[in-house]
Length: 308
Image (cartoon, rainbow, N blue to C red):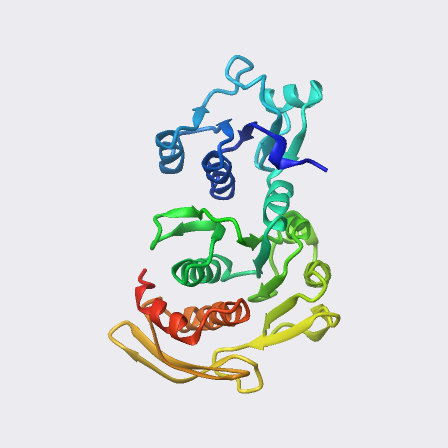
């Protein structure tokens, strides 16, 4: 198994991707020498360059890092890519992004958020609430979190990872807490049918560590769950769930609601995230926050800050 602690030089193939750039930021902030390739400049590559990361936009053997100890690639890199093949042919350690995310996240208290939709919003809310509640959070996000103007937050105690079902990437993660927002028909080029997708999510549930917690939307089928760990359900309004909203009111873009949970109720939470689906995402995030010991007072205090 690759030991990330001992590696000092890392080269990214596809460094400008939203998930790749989060990992690049993580390693750069932790003192590694980070460089990489991407096809075209973007706002993300511009930011990485400002942060001290060297990036080439030319697929050339003259521009790669021959001293790199680890090569991280995205599946979007074409199989005939010159740099990719050179590293393979010269026996470098070449690993997928998902494998590295797993190694990084699994080294901390791992909070992994999966689902066919809602991952980024839920992950961003969790990251915000925990970070602002003085938890040391490393968040690898699939979008730019408005409150931090970044897709990465640095910390060393809790890892918040978007668990991507594409190419079964999320099976690299071993969560202490896993949350699943939804399981729908998607990525049929990978899976072929819904049953195969459900089987993959079941395998992800089985990656939850012993004594871990599995939090799922109440729509998730029982057969997908891992019954060997603690199971909790959440919903927007369904009172059969462990976490749900009451007294939901919308006024000029502000959502106000109470969250009922197994030990009581948090009253008058306010959120500016648009849509009832984001209220539901917030409820899932609150379920995570409660289960890592964030107080009701802190949870309630953070939510007015969540503006799109």
